[in-house]
Image 1 (spheres, one colour):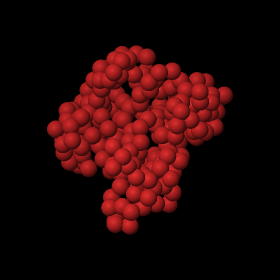
Image 2: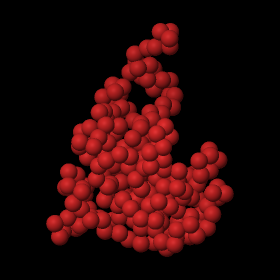
Image 3: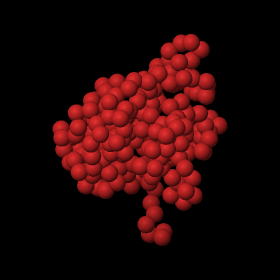
Image 4: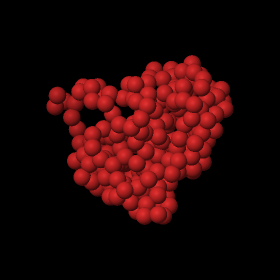
Length: 227
């Protein structure tokens, strides 16, 4: 395979000079980052955008756009604090509908409502410019849908995760409740044709985070992406 190898930074710089589009894809999320995550419940690397510089030698100034990919709800694998976790019928329903089980081990993922405090932390630490909201269709059958807009900690309201990053097991989520849309979205291909309650839900997330939503997925197939 030696003929396929080259210094990565040099090759990328060449592509850049040729005006080619380059996509860096990261796995996992900011809360598993060894430096900025919920230590010790982290991985051993930087899955943040900072990992592009440390792993590839590419300065952040060379990056034009950062897409932050979020599910329409939240999941976590393994141990660690999870403020919006649902240990009830709603959590199980999300898990089953979303097939939130490990692909190799079959281990059930922990599920909860969308956490805007955590999302905002991810945006600030990663420099996210565009939101991608996946698996919106998993929420199609819910009567009510909740979003965490803040935490209660020591009788005070907290809006920034960095203040409580290592005390997340002691916070209580503050929820805003939305009416569900109770419609099948899996066949929709135009953003404006999404149910009004789904649009309200997405608009609230976008406005709260002050970041535009560029893509929404309503199913696992490529043609189920709504731009």
